[in-house]
Length: 432
Image (cartoon, rainbow, N blue to C red; front, side):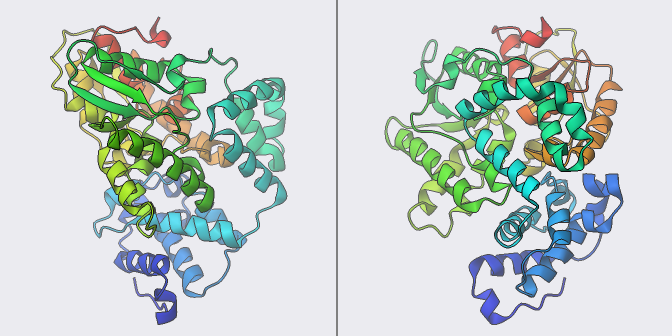
């Protein structure tokens, strides 16, 4: 794609990077076939190619974002299916990230939208704040349907609909600490505790820790680790996102330089995609560039790490598992083979749904801020999963589990919960 940036504009590293990404786009349109918003809405501006045009025009003219640009940028799920499809290697992820920062800095959204985004950023980046928010949400849950009918309050209604009716008790796996390997220690890893996941579904981290320690892996939850910064990063909140990431980088570097780590294991693939990108995020930060690269180099999805342990094949369990590939795992991290291979090795019959490349509509805060599109994508995803007639649905990201579970009458669990059960651990609660 031809660009017309001035030498002065290209003197800025971020603009120069954006210009290089835009120039790689050859207008082929392959991305439109796999973009969930284009497939759903049929609007060229809701395709990656259309958004690239909008971003190019905005950046070339050094102008603030307007309502039209913000609308179509906000509708992007960051599912990255387009990067998997693109034959030209367009780095759409970093371009849309840059656009979101520019929109956030230069466009003033309506007051109610600003309030919604601020509430989500505050509540979903801390396990303690999230638990408090969910207790308050229980009071408003009966009014969710009414709020969703009011355009200005629709996002609040979507938030209340997705809020769990009850929260499990606080888990010991949500606090800093070390869990020794059972038997001879094979490896030592740090595991991301997470923000929302320990509050909504502590069984995921519990299953991961039980499985890993049974396999001879020492697991540490480092003191000082907090939010990875992913959620605010995708909202364009660059400063707060980077501040959160720095705190977590420092916590992990202390472990790396202390007793050492073989890996940093993540059970939430949305967080994993961002953590693996820390090296890029902090490439211009002299204090953190090297530390961020070291952390990114050690980051592994839990299924990636399990795949290195050469697990023995287990007998058939007679259960059909519909495997939902979360976008952040299959498109963001390019982890596609390991989860399915592990489940088959664990004795499960694995089936894959039609349109597996399409997003379920969760995408961090998307199913609350863009609930109409998210609901259409959810219905499409659930329909394809149910067509497999599975006994259980497995996914590698809490957002997907929550989104699909809100509409499917089939148990939805994390892949690691099934793996733990197959190798002698606790049976997933949703299967009992």
